[in-house]
Length: 205
Length: 205
DNA sequence: ACGCCGTTGCACAGTACTGTGCAAGTCGAT
DNA sequence: ATCGACTTGCACAGTACTGTGCAACGGCGT
Image 1 (tube, rainbow over the protein chains, first blue to last red):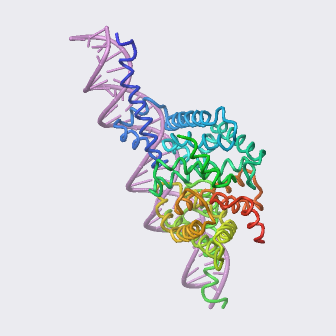
Image 2 (tube, each protein chain N blue to C red):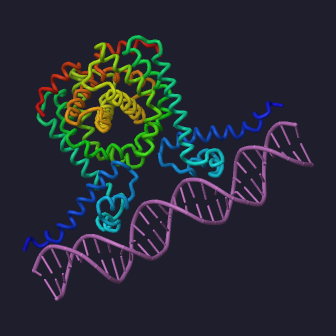
Image 3 (cartoon, each protein chain N blue to C red):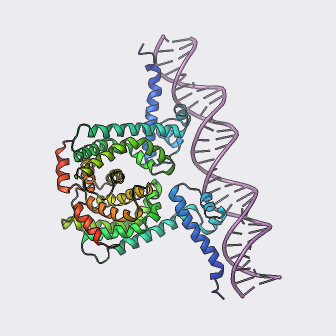
């Protein structure tokens, strides 16, 4: 029996998954990667990819949806039930970091003009949460920055990307990068460097 | 007489300049803008563009060269003869800011995989200067960061881009953005927020 | 008026990619 | 062995872009 559909779908589903995974890494390297490049990299013929996704845009859309979902979950999980804004920021950065480098595609595609709007919209909830956190920190005097919270959120995002690139270029080990990113985000928000370091060190992640 | 070449070249040179200017703004909006889009935007036929630049790549290359030259000059001018690393960083950020938004193309194209290498190489001198500055600040204990100077330079660059986007999205007025960027860069490097604000305020730019 | 230089408009070859159709093949399950 | 779902290979139309060639046209200086 092996369940009525599992047998037949397992192959197809595995292919679908693999196509998505490979597409992610391939688009990461080159946002303009063609369907053929992706298909071949996934060990499959172009036609097969079209069997799973009706169009290039649909494929990418699926990818973005998955990435956004994973990021949102990590971000939310990192900050849940934490009172201190500084600690919440640190925790969410660390949580996001765990999976972020897998989804750098988001950032890479976010730079592209057209697709950007869509991603911006889908990421809005996460950004809102971030802004809220930063605003609280500013209000309570824990943070100090000439930037309003929304702009600070941009800086926050871009800093994660910068640290990722530093890791890519071998300037930083991947293990310590998360903690470094967290500390740097906090310092940029105006938390004294010593306190930021101390705070992040306490979080045994 | 009107000078032997000025008369004839004025038209052509003016066209060439206008093509370059328009190409910059057009590629800024869409890094994949076609030669036709650029030509039409410049009020010229595609063929004419090929009369000035042998290929798309040559056009972009010229653009990048100009941008890099302008940025380098501004960066160098900002930090010349300044002893205090913190002040030098602040001044160079402010100086770069003046022209940076005109050359956002650099950043936009830098995100593209292929072209990135070339830009990275050409920007190396500026980056080296930045790293040196940051290193000095770290050595003298003026800055405090878990990141090594080269990685901090990445953060530095990306932060400028983040502030630019904040301006684009109307979260910040363009006038104050430069000062905000400078303060934020300094705070991210570990300079206490109060001192960073004070320092930047003193620089009457 | 003449000539030069830049510009125009058109046509063309070459390339690359997307999305679709269809017949033949493959592999697991029954 | 046979069915069914998935995959393959190929062919095709449609589109968009790059570079190039060439004849005609424009203005500006002499």
